[in-house]
Image 1 (tube, rainbow, N blue to C red):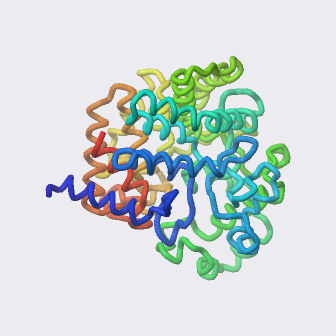
Image 2 (tube, rainbow, N blue to C red):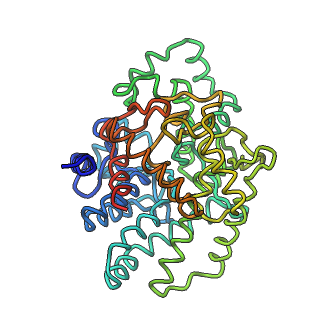
Length: 442
């Protein structure tokens, strides 16, 4: 067996080991539930090895859809008496909102909308009849999700959708989000705990720092703020009007919106294939989103940024998000060239094992601290796709090769040190394995 065959076999084993029957957990122990964009990435890899299992992964996500169309970022488990009494499940209390599914406990927030991408990728492996049946089966849920995003998350009808928790961005502790929440006064109880220097004690109660060194995760005070924001959402029963009336976090996240713009195009493609006419209102919103992305461009720094929903100010902390408009597929050739220059720069996004989640030259850069420096295979995959869409095929090939080499050398880790390629985070991580399968097979 050659090295590529060995790597492919090892990736398949990771996915098999993490398979729970109808869905795949990201990693044993640390991540025991089903996550939205994890399952989408996983399905994209599974389509090469077991098309029916890839379909099941997506259908399993759709069982958690709320009546209002929202797809939650986590499906936690059955809504029964014992689970309702569990501290972990009570953190969310999704059953308090009448839109939540009756038989499941979920989170009350969403995550980057990659599901249309996964549906399209799965459909590409089918004949015409199979693809039509597949699209018809999932289209109502996809449409409801996109309509919910516009209805609840674009209240000004501007084309960009907002996020109400850093977890919704997918990049959790990315510098723009962390810097944004630090602008607000800390709740008194968090301030007191911070002054008491009890971080080591707090870490004893965290699942992540039980299994991963605390140096690789959010510090205790930031983790508490994240929990505090989530608690406020729960107390407001995830009612968007109540949340926006007094929110600690309301951001038009660049990564989320770039993915959403791409997802919209997939939705249009799916609708066309099954001869369903989308409403003029939705088509106008989709068109507006394409142009609205350019409002996030800053000509002074030649970068894209997220934006504060309330103040409308750009959050000028550079992160890997600035490259994600490549994936949106709607930016000009000139803008794309400027982003690729950043990717070529060793001091920005082009170290030995690109692409770091924060530029190497940034004051935020820490090579193994979650979303503040490490290289992640899922964002590499999105950037590779974006490079291909914009005609930078040599760059896409180079990033594909370096990503595969990094995983071949260090294993299927959650994330990697961009300077050395060394593994960090959880091991045997599902989306790393799935996307390596996709890169090897595509």
